[in-house]
Length: 267
Ligand code: FE
Ligand code: FE
Image (cartoon, rainbow, N blue to C red):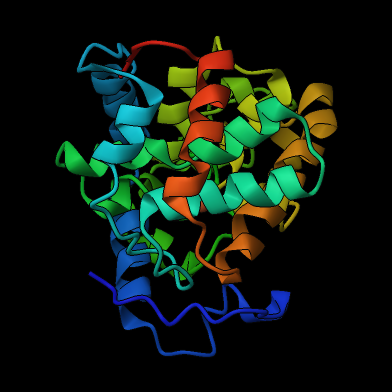
C-alpha cells in the first residue's frame, strides 16, 4: 500500500494529482492492474454482485466509522483518515456557502470504499474511472495499459461508441467498477440530482476534467457536469487544509445525516 506524501498546508492546485513529478511506482502499478482487469464483463459481474444492497444495514455514521481503517492506494495526496477526508470535504463545501445536501454529498462521497473492507482489491474500488464496452480514450491516465485489457482485442467493443448509442447519456454507460457507482446506488433516494452526479462521477476524470467521452453524454449530463466539477474542487483542494476537529464537528454532521438519510441504510 502506498505511503502517501505529506499533505502540507496551503498547497497550490497544480501541486495536487501530480503523477509525473514523483516516481510513484505504486500508483503506476495500481493503474496497470486497473486497466488490465476492468473489462465489460467484470463491471457487469460486480454490479450484479453488489447493487442488490443486501450485504449490511448500517447508518451513515456507522459507515463512516466502519471505513476509518482505509488508506487510498491510488491517491497521491492524502494522508488523512477517511473520516477526516469526509469531514474536510464537507467543511470546504460548507465554508463556500453551498447547500446542506451538497455538504452531505461531501461527507459521504467516499463511503463506497467500504468495498475494500469486503475484500475487493484497490484497483476495483478507487482510482479514475472510464467507460467500458467502447474504445478507451487516450485522455485516461496511463492509457498505454489498456493494451493489457482483453476488451481491447475485441473489435466490437473498440469502436468509438462500442455497445452504446451516440449520446445515450451516462446513466446508460457502464463505467469501470468502483466506489462512485456503489455509493450512488446507496444514496439514490436521499439527495438531489446534483449530489448524485457528484457521487457517481467524481472519479470520472476523463470526462469532467479532460473533456473525453462527450459522444456518450446527453443534455442532462452536460447540464449536471457543473456539480461534478464544483464538487471536485472541494474534494481535491480540501486535502491540503488543516485536519478537521472530528469530535467537535460530529454533532453537526449527525444532524445533517438525520435530515437526509436517517436510520439504517442498505449497503
Ligand atoms: Fe472518491
Ligand atoms: Fe474524496
